[in-house]
Image 1 (cartoon, rainbow, N blue to C red):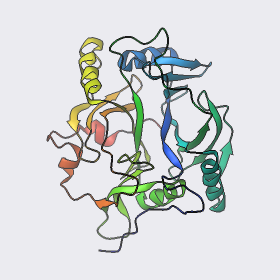
Image 2 (cartoon, rainbow, N blue to C red):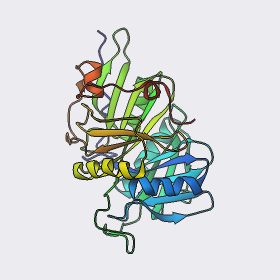
Image 3 (cartoon, rainbow, N blue to C red):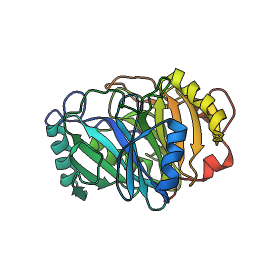
Length: 311
């Protein structure tokens, strides 16, 4: 087997020991109709509208007031995913690294979430937009006045899964942003990967990359385990059907359920994932595929395996 180089790309001159990114800040999904999308997402997750424009809305958790999801009118799929820089210096250091490798970035916080002080976006090798945001000092998390009710779900942003025929190339590019490998499956006949799970902080992954036709497979939001089961009970009231699950993933050790919105966008709703530590050494994923996907056994339907989120 060829030697595998793990993507641990940090330098003392440009990042703190915790890395330049703190985690996933928010994700924006494209929808064809905001008037349909907003009440659907509110019904499923209990989110509240933090800010609304003509063709975009930002949704926040009523428990914390934190924006976790955006809806952008026009088509389906991923508009962009945003990662939070730890400091102003880390924000600039990432931009400098991207400039050195010739990556094209566009600066401006106008299109980002409320509270963004600085932001830039870069097209990753799959063509999707990744944003790095440096927010102003956030107010302490607090329930949203007039919107919080007993039993409200504390929903947080988690990760996304994308697919590409060049997992190694995508892994190397994200290494420039500060991503590190947590787990991987090497290809048997080349120096590439079948799967990579990448993180920027102490949690197991914020991006999962799988081999396949390029595209975004799903966007993931998380809840505590108790709230996860509350969410499932809520499905019996809203009559929103799951595509797959509930199940338990091996990578990250998360409870999970997959749901498609009215337009075909795929959400993964999970419990909190395992913490592995920032300096965790990546390990090969050695179990059978079925066990990685669902330690309880039942495997995903054909739609899960062959259909992506829009463009």
